[in-house]
Image (cartoon, rainbow, N blue to C red; front, side):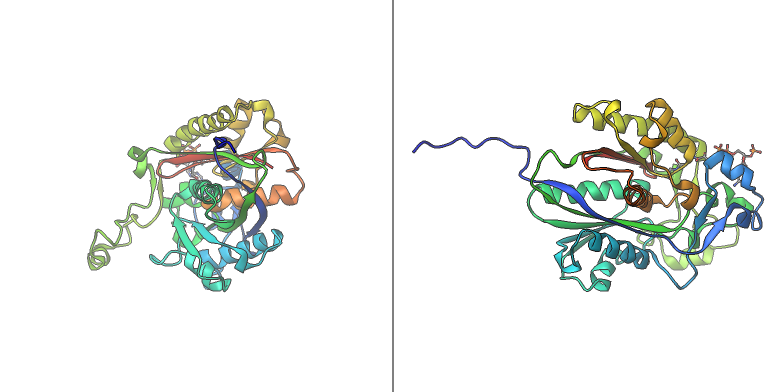
Length: 346
Ligand code: UT7
């Protein structure tokens, strides 16, 4: 009996998205609603961002974790699974219910799951792409079979709804999206690769610069706090972020294609993080993609940060815009800066 030399394989399993879900609060906030609170207009917002309306929670009714749980329930049921089939939870958000613990454990609690592991991801607009990449590696290594990935955000409670904050507060919305990533034996199918990056020298360009409680005495912060203290509100150097976003989106999409020896013509569906319709249109034009090859819903939800890609992906699948065998690319860019892409054979 000869000793066979094992065939060197990249990994034993692939991972594929088996179920998707999303949840957005019922309350619609139009551009006209915002122009009652601050000096802005429907015309300015639509022209600069493409946004017509966004969803905001009603105080006390929803939190980041409660919306995440709703999206997760839908994803688990669409995958034909029950919460106890889930082996691991990945929760991406910049707006956790509590300073700590993060919302991952609340999903374990509220879905009455086994005491599986739960990790919280803090990569803002790239959070879902980072989370999906992490889940993919757990599955490819054989460690887990079904991983729940959630992106959920409540922005509305933390925005400066006066003219002072208008360049940021008109953009962001609340919502949640989720997928169940599952083991796939066919290595040609599912997540082909993921690509993650960061550049911390731009950390402050899109940030909440209020010092973390770990580094400041909270009494000091409260003592110093006054109505002119904007450090608790998100700050964004919009033009700078925009310029970096278009470059990094392009790079990371190309990186994903090249890694898989694919070309732009192979893209069936690009789901960009919904940061600004103009960014998505720029990328679409640059890669010469048709309207059918790019999915946008920022018009209706604004920028929901870590939730934007899973909401858009779930909607695109629900509308039949993603078919078996399609090449789907997810791409994100945001605060950190961090950015990334995931290449999927559906
Ligand atoms: O999700 C993470 C990634 N985020 C992004 O990628 C976002 C990137 N940046 C952007 O989307 C855009 O830069 C913004 C939408 C934030 C701003 O658009 P812009 O075309 O860069 O406008 P601007 O900041 O240069 O502002 C133009 C003018 C200014 O007035 P002056 O200085 O020309 O008199 C602003 O004060 O528009 C004014 N402005 C507004 N006017 C009405 C800023 N915000 C508003 C507003 N309503 N909401």
